[in-house]
Length: 388
Ligand SMILES: NC(=O)c1ccc[n+]([C@@H]2O[C@H](COP(=O)([O-])OP(=O)(O)OC[C@H]3O[C@@H](n4cnc5c(N)ncnc54)[C@H](O)[C@@H]3O)[C@@H](O)[C@H]2O)c1
Ligand SMILES: [Fe+2]
Image (cartoon, rainbow, N blue to C red; front, side, top):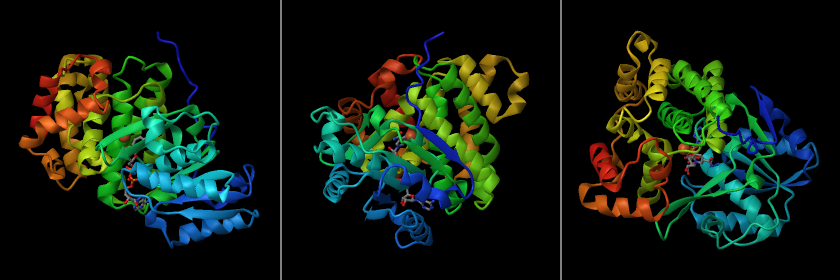
């Protein structure tokens, strides 16, 4: 059995309906001036006002930054980082989806070190002075970024999407309040949940998977499987929202030791080229990656297929594994209004080589070394063609 690396866990995980009301108390241990990264969905909202009031009750002032866009660009993150540095904040608080949380993480590094976001991704800027403490409050149940040491940003000039990883950007507190997620419409709920599922699933396939990452990953898949339909149909069901929120946090924990593989690499490249919604980009390729070689990880594919469709339990393991791509397609068809194809984002056959060039040049080809079977560029070309 591989050694277990549990270095990468958030300082504290607080989970529960209504926890957000105590945000001022949680923040007060870190200082008196917060840099508040606020997802634009919440700008001018009652939720933002309640958070600011809770902070004010503890004598904490706020500098608000709300110019976060999905797939955050390095230049927008730099702007936020400079504002935080100039304001002399003690901590970074974020209320938002993965894009906001990743922005907050890079801001926390820039506030301490100067430099610029893409520099920390490509290694030209060094993190010598750590990062401000981060309190992350996710509003989507998908990325699990509140529980990871990773921040993903887009270089809009190169059309590369890349990650900075460091222990300093693990949130000091991950505060997960499922009530907040009930404002997500069905499609966003489904896309983000597919991302959470993909983190759990992909983390099972890579060589660094271990007993800890596998345990949280399988439990995340079970929670996803049992609750995704309810969440999509009735977004106000807080029990189901809570289950998916946990699945998302578990997915984040799983990838801190397990990592992701081909579906994420292929999806991130669509995000970089076409600003594709992250969860949708994963939905466009996940089942086809599995379908290409259902012999790649038979026991894992079989176990996941049986969690998603317990009736498969009577079949031999190879048949369970072979059924997984169709099980995934059927589930996605239930929760999404239509099948997601890569051409929906703008990828056409005449841009396939450009897509592959960016995939390989940007480092999003990490699946080459960490997928259970080796897939070469021609294999990936075939898979991507099937996803168009
Ligand atoms: N750091 C990590 O470990 C990690 C892991 C996976 C993905 N990511 C990154 O996270 C980003 C994707 O994050 P995401 O999928 O959470 O989406 P997002 O943060 O990009 O948000 C998507 C949209 O949903 C809106 N929104 C957010 N919360 C809402 C709510 N409660 N109700 C209604 N609308 C809401 C946002 O305003 C935005 O328009 C990508 O850049 C991806 O690469 C990071
Ligand atoms: Fe993801």
